[in-house]
Image (cartoon, rainbow, N blue to C red):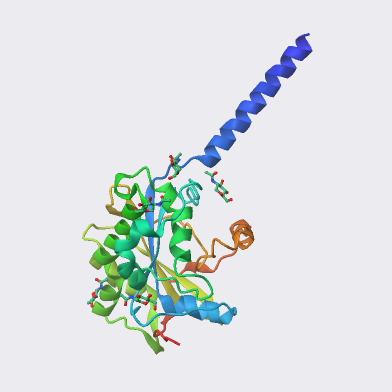
Length: 268
Ligand SMILES: *[C@@H]1O[C@H](CO)[C@@H](O)[C@H](O)[C@H]1NC(C)=O
Ligand SMILES: *[C@@H]1O[C@H](CO)[C@@H](O)[C@H](O)[C@H]1NC(C)=O
Ligand SMILES: *[C@@H]1O[C@H](CO)[C@@H](O)[C@H](O)[C@H]1NC(C)=O
Ligand SMILES: *[C@@H]1O[C@H](CO)[C@@H](O)[C@H](O)[C@H]1NC(C)=O
Ligand SMILES: *[C@@H]1O[C@H](CO)[C@@H](O)[C@H](O)[C@H]1NC(C)=O
């Protein structure tokens, strides 16, 4: 009888622990936003090297949005928070002309909406707890607003960092010069991510973090996503495979003791 009671207690306790672990894993809470922009040509350098199709439309001439990601500390943060909340193109119809130019899908073997649908399902559905990103329209609008506010293409041009196939740039020099231009607040640091290909480092992404009130803040943590680009949601199996590859590091912090390439955009 006592044995049975203890047994029931143990089972109940284990269930509670299991449930707790489950709850923790499923929590949609996050602490800050990670806002990432990409240099589109480097996405194509990678894609063309692995046989994937990449196309940059003529109306894309500068840095492009990758995503606005609810994030937690140095972990990955929540993802796919509401699978019933499907991406709806009509909801962002007014933003499409801007999204085509500033948030384009470069994977030409997927459809135009695939990148937005992926970012919405994976990250946007987790941003609903913040007033300014509480629905699909506001989420995409906010990313576009941040993009206009930062204008990384303009900042790099101002400091003389211009795409050039025959030039190499110093990472530390770029960081030192862009930091005061991004924020007047001292100590706020952006991150630069690089893609390593054939022993060369390519400037790929600039990562800037924001509080949930959209004040710029430092991204001291590791980048929350180390994959270079997205996978089409239609290819579910592929996604699961990629999501499960813990150490599939396409992207790394640009090493401060190396020079980096910043190639010109080619449109073919
Ligand atoms: C949504 O689907 C993904 C992938 O199938 C799954 O990992 C995730 O747990 C789902 N999210 C919710 C809130 O059920
Ligand atoms: C998930 O999304 C659906 C469809 O937009 C919505 O009705 C539902 O309330 C959402 N669930 C949560 C937990 O936010
Ligand atoms: C998609 O968005 C449009 C415009 O906001 C809305 O009228 C429509 O009901 C939405 N469709 C779904 C399935 O939510
Ligand atoms: C930009 O290019 C895309 C793809 O070629 C096209 O669908 C879109 O209409 C263009 N947008 C503008 C504003 O020219
Ligand atoms: C960024 O600034 C440049 C000028 O430096 C301008 O030509 C461009 O239109 C701006 N981009 C955006 C998205 O505002």
